[in-house]
Image: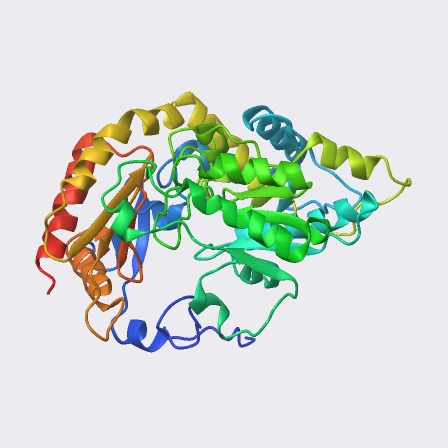
Length: 441
């Protein structure tokens, strides 16, 4: 019999884990083996309440029968179809459904496989769009400090989380960054959008003056910065960014990989804040994380600009797995679940309960800030002297030991449960989190 290379003993060592302290993890692994609805099950049989929707992505809860069955049915009918010069019905149906759901004239969809790929795709579309319009000097991108836009070369370059950048050099030339919007002394314990900080958008005018508007292709921001610790935009901030971009002919890209599909109580943060971007990146909740998939939605004028060019291939970009049949099946079924169960409206209705429960942690040891919007929230802890991030990581471990999964970034505990969470489970979540905070020095 041929050697399949399958090890008889799982040593954990061959897997190089992403964004993980590999040596630390492998010395004391945290393993999950199944998931259903609001819970994971660990390898020792314990139930974990999912306070983070996996990684901001399982918006309808785990193991949803309708999505599972749609993927099963699709893989028996057709496992794969090439996306270059070929099509399959699911890709067109999903695009039509998304075009109906998306705000304004964001009505054309380009598919990729991860949020990182969606961001790099959006950046390339922006460059090609300006070139198509005879504005080839527009090659510069403006990101934002503490922004996260995935781990591609483009997304890392426009991102503003220092640890994600410092190992990799300059990445892309011609990138600048807006300041982030967080100010603890002015914003601590804000509920929803902070009152202070809208003026920070005016820094975009400074960058326009510095670089000349005719060199800037696009500004990319997360409406709510998620991975850096749920930074909610100040009142008036996004409106001002949109106005400045309009005045200078700069495209505005919303990265809604985290905020899309009900997370803030509307289908998208663009709906919630009433701001229409020129492009939007999506992933995570697009398929309820059942099959990897991402997408870029573009406004009609952008698509039409490409279609008005010479006959032939309009953009030389794409992926082997763009609009993969299984992902399209999962996406269509996920949209059905969101609609049939009214999950976006449910998130909005649970918002006040969520807000009250998270802010009830104010006053616990080392809690220096709490912030929330929709079914997103963050609890920020005072860092230990000389050991930034250590206190929150110990809280994270304490939560895991006692049956709760959360996200930890720096000294911030970030929360984003599946939208099917009940009021009782919200109470349970914050009881466990509060106990973990109190148990941690």
